[in-house]
Length: 173
View: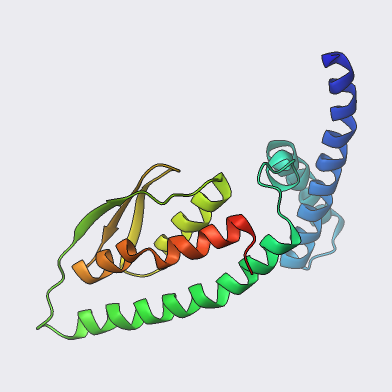
């Protein structure tokens, strides 16, 4: 039985490898915009190496089943996240320019209550992208985050970002 599964998995791996190689090579051409045979050859070699190492990551069987509803929920999340990044940038600039407000670094721990690895990655990256906060430890049971001020830490503990990431996991639009 497992021999049959291996036979079925091999064509998928080959397709994944070929597709990843093509994507990497097109990306190489777009970035270099150099069509001399030497550069195209280097691009093909690099694309083959990168595809060999990473084809399962780019075009693999995801364990989180991205449905259309999840994509739509993610599309709704991105503008909200960008706005949070802008607000946090302004806050960090204010802290830098205003000597009256003290920077009080703190570390907070919380349970994100996430169900998927995708949710953990989205939340960890969203926290780290937001100026003033850095994710130190991230898993389904616990997040440890360094925040530049107590205010940043408290905003994390309110759980708005976690709720929005849970909405992505559940495909809520």
